[in-house]
Image 1 (cartoon, rainbow, N blue to C red):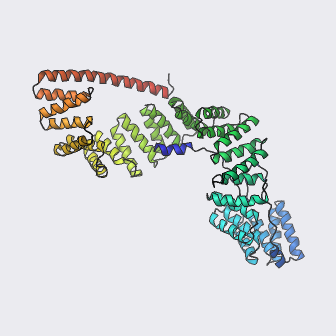
Image 2: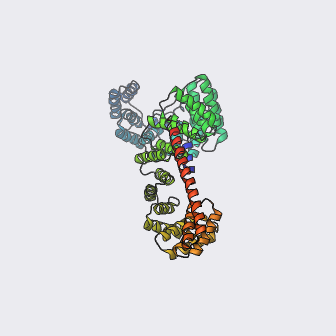
Image 3: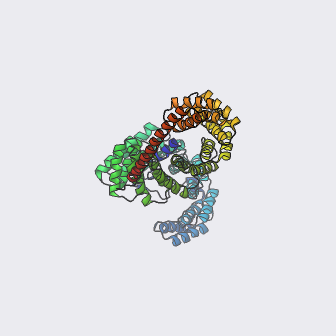
Length: 551
């Protein structure tokens, strides 16, 4: 569980660097240079010569569209279609105008009509595919672009757009292929190079990706925003060493920028350069203390250093800014747990569960905290809930059985432990718990073979030896009980309960001197346990004050 979670928290949170579908809005800090659009298919023009009226209406529609006079653009485009109803060009222009006006359903029909009038006219295919992509019909959009390229393999917009769509579906190999094809015509285009490197690393085209990164880095060497965007792309692709260098250069150009410092800190963290990460993340928090994610990352870094008090403080800062983030409460609970502040841990895990009641990791964590605190009934309830959420949780029936046993729910404990032992017949702790339950329920005949099996598997198992001695005493075989208890205290001179049982057994055997000695040892160890308990409670109080930053 811990290993799985570590993977989750190691992953950096970055701004997305994604190529946009051409003719849709593309978010980028670079100039909007895209592959040069291909010329209109010659077949369409040749097959449908336009009348003067149709041509004038089309020219007017395009002019109105460019000036964003949408009503006039639509009026003129529809006029062009009336003058030339069989013109694929007129239908395509009408589709573009309707798309721009937000009338996607009508635009779709216009593009389909244009394609039907001239199946080799690639512009409406490109526009139809764009529209499908806008509607999140990715598979259909990809199919349209693929069909377009069968007609015109050199249509660069389609290669660019397919690169984008394949990246969205995480088919990085095909995405890189299409971006590379688009770059053949525009090898120095920075936007294209950035889009390409962002998938080429993931497609394991390392050399080409590095070359594209070199091109971008040279082009934006004096541009803070350009360097920042490149750094994000590199970090997204786990090129942390290079991302650190790029972010560092951006920081030199524009010091004390939150986004640069934060992402520099994240990249350092992901390379396990924890001390450097803390420095830059702390600087980012000084510049802008509001984002909870910065405090969350600082908490993770402090936790890596086993600085539990500072880790807890940073997680509390994150919670102050985003109290409904279950993960923050969970991690604060984890720091409390590690520091031995179980009460605080249970409370924070409870808040995480309230926010996300179906997350089995949160429920298991609270169960473990209750277990460590000795709150057996609460621990049993948590482990029961975890079993409902995920019946395949590792050792869940054993944990449930043990805590029900400790809580005195012997029938339930027996049911769960027997179920677990059926699948794990040599699990010593489960066998020991079953034997304990059998003794407590007076089923001495059931307890004996269980204890003998444990001692066959592990002859020096002290808890089993103690219960084996108790079994003899309950069977009123006091001499054998005394012999077994003597073996226990020989192995564990601090076994308080074994000395007490020896006192009782010697008394029944009328071995008064031995009984008095055993009683004295019991009282001495009891006093030590009492002092140890007092010391532990004081230690817990001190740790609690430290974790909560109380004087």
